[in-house]
Length: 201
Image (cartoon, rainbow, N blue to C red):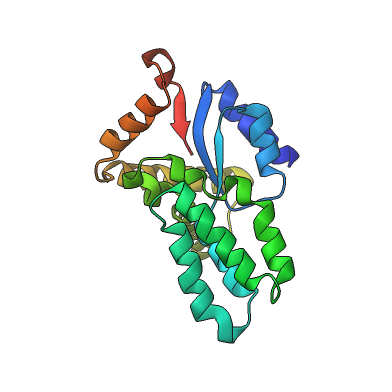
């Protein structure tokens, strides 16, 4: 938690004055750190991680039906419908999986934050899987080296890999991202003066 707070402080000191939206894999204490350093940021637990966690803790004979029902929750047309389906899901399974359902209720406050975004970009931002794939790729590349001469040489190699990955990602365009993000800014009354120092993570 202290390391996480330090990283966010470093980001702020490097000029990022405000973060709109943060997706996390549910690391303990993350939300508290974010609230302390970026009090106006909206927090979203990674939906894919939530779904995996649910399916990993239910009996095999229930997995297909639960997977279908929880997907319906997260693919609802708006936040109100999602919350109604979510509570229906909780009520249905609370007697069979009381601990799991109670845990889900503890993240209810933030689990549908992504529903506040325009529908066109929700699926682009409700998971941090892209970042996890990047970390796996970095680990894979480092393993092929077998050993590094020093910590500095490993950092240099990682820097070059990240630079290559960044250049590759910069060539991609998310469909209609500019339009939907501008719509989001207008809905939340962001001004031209503060847009330059704001990001979505």
